[in-house]
Image 1: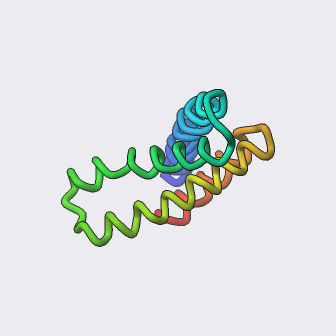
Image 2: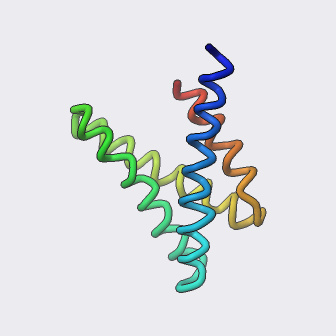
Image 3: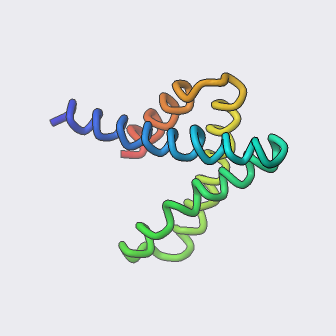
Length: 102
């Protein structure tokens, strides 16, 4: 029950962080400065969530608000991973956010 839900939430957040901050952000940092790399990674992080909402029929205003929120969240998680040099803090924050969001 609860333990399985927590583990799935943790695994999902960890996989997203490994993909976005562990791979995409690191590649972007090789090609550009930190600000641009963070912006591109945050935009991709937000955009990767949109197809699921569209498939579920989520109304456009709600999608727009959610994309804006995820853009800010993606930038914050990227900064955290970049500043600490570790994915563990961003995984922890991402997991906590997902747990609170339900």
